[in-house]
Structure formats: structure tokens, C-alpha cells
Image (cartoon, rainbow, N blue to C red; front, side):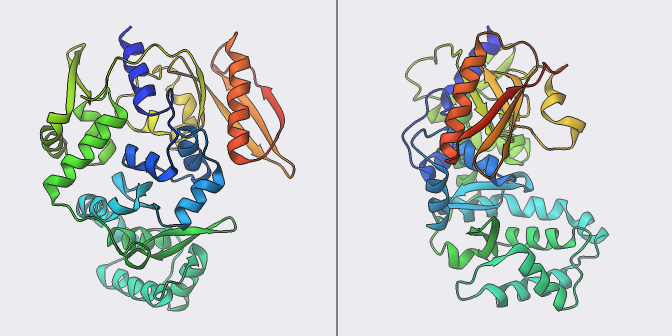
Length: 364
């Protein structure tokens, strides 16, 4: 019952069980930040929560500078609201840049080289220019700075955390890079304390029930700072003691979320899983390795039934549509029809027909 309570509350607050007719930028703002290192998975994370939204709507919001894709919390890529990108960077950057000093040294990237890279990037992008990542790294190579062996990735990563660049609109299948100050000239500025409060409020509102340890992990901040943010936001939150742990959610929740037995196809890296340090309320420990095969950090798209992760799914793009394969952890029983309907919703979001949908035998 405890697991069901937590799972149902999360499905509700994540806007999965009760998706809203919000714009893409409203969805991103409600969640605060949405993990996005896999672009096509990340756009579905938004579409899943807004039934009327199609892929083209999200890409229009990106092109219109309402949603920003950049390295943010925990040092990984996120979609964040345009008006919040700068204070989120200011909150995250000092700790993350400090933590990567050893790795930068291993790659031979000292302050002088990184500063030169930033100069090249500014010269290439100033005046509203947009460039693919590969083209930008080629310019750095032509200046005699080697970008192989992950050096190029870390150059761009460092530039993002200096508040210099972010990703712009898609150019075909390639993401472009732009100067952040030109792309988002107007952005809110918050004090460090106010940033912690704002982030805590959005986190527990969109992801409750959750603990302060979950919040610290998700935000990539110290437990001390997480507690400071929670304390500042407490007037708009309520707590519940569950098995000796204190869980928090919005005080504006009118009623406890009803038990949800519906089926959802979540993208890989979805906040429903990645938003927590402790995922045991929705994911059995013995099946957890199945959504991250080989423990390689790549989270597979997931099947949710009754709030629990019960399998994974894979889609393959073909010339005339998509093929989908369902990989359940056990027998799906009567839920299989609902899985197929959920797959149809994904296909409608992408704007392509399903050519074939099949079920692979239960994974063990």
C-alpha cells in the first residue's frame, strides 16, 4: 500500500496520470527541469504530459526561445524554462566546474586553453549565428586545439557552465549551438538562497511524494543546501511520514490521488525515474538493472502499469513509419491492449504510423 501511495501521488504530480492541456513551455516550467541528453526521448517526456502537443509544437517552442536545452543540474543536459536558465546555471556551475577540475587536467584542458576555446566560440557565433556542434569543433581544431578523446565535449560543457552557450533549434537532425546571452537576453536573476527555494518548491510540487535526499540528488546540490531550500519552501508544502522517512509534496494538493491502474509508455531518462535517488517505490530492485542494461548509464524507455515499471519498449524509425517492440518483465495479461493503445498515442505525437508492433518474450 505504501508503494502504491507514493507511485500514485507521483503519477499525478508528474502530470502523467492527469496530463494537462498546457503548452510545452508550461510543462517544462512546472517540472523545473527535464533531463534531456537523448533529444527524441526528451521531447516525448513533454508530449506525454500534454496530450494535444505534437513534436512540431515542442520544436517550435525551442525555436521561439521558450524552452532552452543546455547542460544544467547534475552536469547533464536538461530542458529548462528560458526565463530560469541563468539562475539555474549560477546555482549549478561553481560546484560542477570544481568537481571536473581533475578530469579537465587529465584531458590537458587548462584555464588558458579553455579561455582560448571560448574566444573562438564567441567569434564564430556572435551576431546571432547558429552552428552544428561538429562545425564548431572543426573551427577549434583549425586553431590548433585538438578536440578528440572527449576534449571537444568538455570544451562545450565548460562553455555552457560559464553561461556562454546553449543549444538552439534543430538543423535537420543536428542540434545547433548559439550564444546564450544573444539567444536569451532576458532571464530572471535570483540570489543563491532564492534559487534554492524556487528549485525546492518546483521539485516537490512536480515530483512529490519525495524526500530531501531525493531533491539533493536530483538537483546535484549538497544535502545541506537541499535542506535550506526545503526550509524556505515549507510554507507551500506538506509532509507525510512514511516508514520513518519524511516525504514532501505541494500543500495545494486538493485530494489524495486515486489509485491509477492505467498503462503509460515513458521515454528513457524520464523524470518519473531519474527524478529520485530512491526509485524503489516504482521499480523493483531485482528488475532495476533491466532498464539500464550493462549499467552503462543509458536508461531505456519504460512501460508503466499501476505506477510500476513492468517492462521496456523500443521504437525503430523506418521510411514509412515506426516499428515498436515491447519487452515485458513478466506476463502483461489484460494490460497488453492498453500497451498497444499507449503506443498509438506515441505514434500520433511523432506523426508517423505504426508499421508493426510486437511483444518479445518476458525478460528475466
